[in-house]
Image (tube, rainbow, N blue to C red; front, top):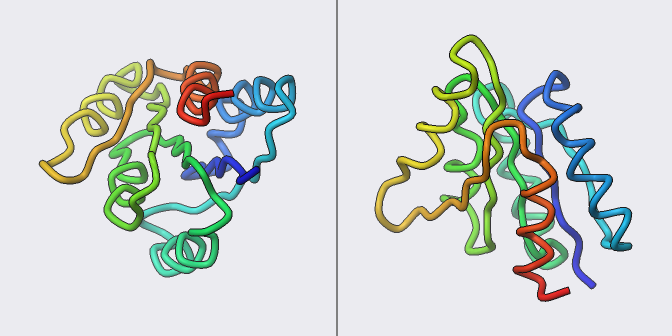
Length: 129
């Protein structure tokens, strides 16, 4: 079975990732977590997506602030991308709006603010497990 790639924009997003990880572990789904910012590590993010295109089934992108990570990922792959907005100064509304306002041709599925659990559950449905 191909893995779920959980990409967090920074270490501060780890708690949200942990709720997704708990669901994936419960269902024995292989996963991998990477800390890759769309702004601070764009080349590294690009290399990761290219190197893992065949082994990843779904990307879960967890980010706050400008929350560009899910959109950047969706522009680099045809795999499903699930965005998880992280709460911040505007209670995550800024990140949520950034994720749901993708241009045509760059789809991102978005779950609620800080809801890594639902992101993992949606990934399971995409995988039909």
